[in-house]
Image 1 (cartoon, helix red, strand yellow):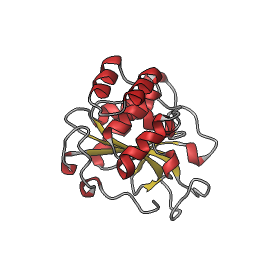
Image 2: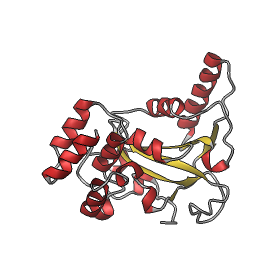
Image 3: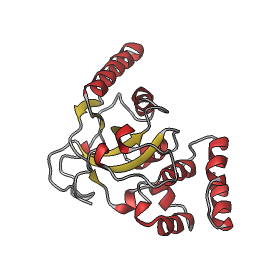
Image 4: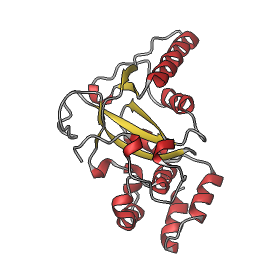
Length: 222
């Protein structure tokens, strides 16, 4: 859990419950937007997002833990299919879902865009400049190069779904080690937090082979 997240192109294949793209065709994006539970759910509900993870990044402290972050920040790490959703679109969601005009009282919750390449840096810089021009406000969210991700503890991963009585525990047991990386789990985590459309939710539920009582509880939560 304390090891850096491997490069996207070295990640193991995702389980076949979501968008079927090979690791070499995926993109990665990393954002600090305050507490990482909300962004994890928000991005997880988006079409084209294949995987979400939350963790710690942007600092130099070795092997950070939740109660010993050092100079790291809570972030959400998104793996996505660029044929379905673009980095520009993900970044727009980032700006719209955190307080970019204020400086966080703790580095743990600061706004930061951690860019994975020169293209992402250019897009983020241009969008920040456009935002400042449009609003007349200074953007406090930093733009920095991504280095490595330290995965957060299991209880932080897909927190909204884990916090759903009965459903979270049973899905975690059913998916096992695949729980964190599952596309379907990312969608459900977003849905129980209120994201996604009715059509999207119904399509995902219709594709699941789950006990009727779990499906009914999920429908009730949506």
